[in-house]
Image (cartoon, rainbow, N blue to C red; front, side, top):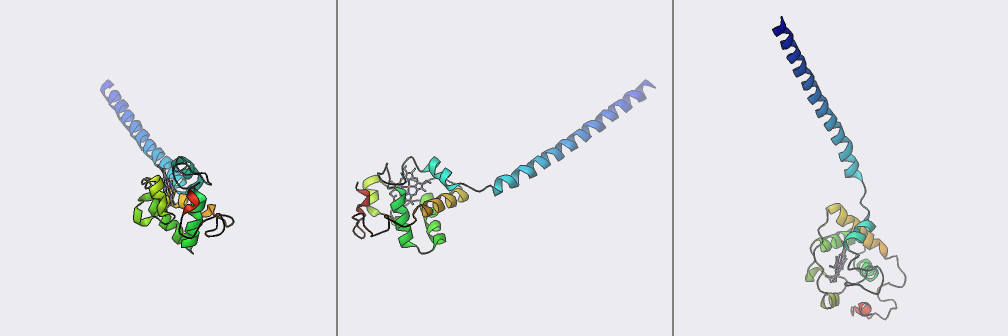
Length: 160
Ligand code: HEC
């Protein structure tokens, strides 16, 4: 009699712990499916990426820190690319793996500041920060060749 009772008790325990594991697994599954899409769809803030990864070297407007300021770079990209998408794509690739050959904005910047190191970012971050840089130039006084004492191709806007 007692043996049977113990047996039932053990069976009941096994049953309930199995139910618990299943519930736990479902719980984890629900948690995972609830968090993943939220993260994946969160838009990357290009300004935040810039502040964190670029602003140590790049100021937005002159005077420069240890790299050319963003506004003249952005202006030069607008001069070189008529399409925003192409400009952003080129810039994202440069940020990921800069090289002397790829430099568009100012070859003299390398002589003055050295080549930019590669910045390890996710594709979404690269795209967001390049888009942010592209959008900084909205015309006006940094227009390539318009005032600022910049001779075409002289790149002397970084001298001050
Ligand atoms: C350690 C310093 C440093 C950091 C950090 C840095 N850069 Fe640069 N960057 C430079 C220097 C120096 C140059 C100029 C020489 C060159 O073109 O490589 C430059 C040039 C550039 C150019 C011009 C490329 C061209 O086509 O001429 C762009 C665009 C640029 N940086 C964007 C960024 C962005 C965006 C970030 C952050 C994700 C960043 N940089 C982080 C140092 C830095």
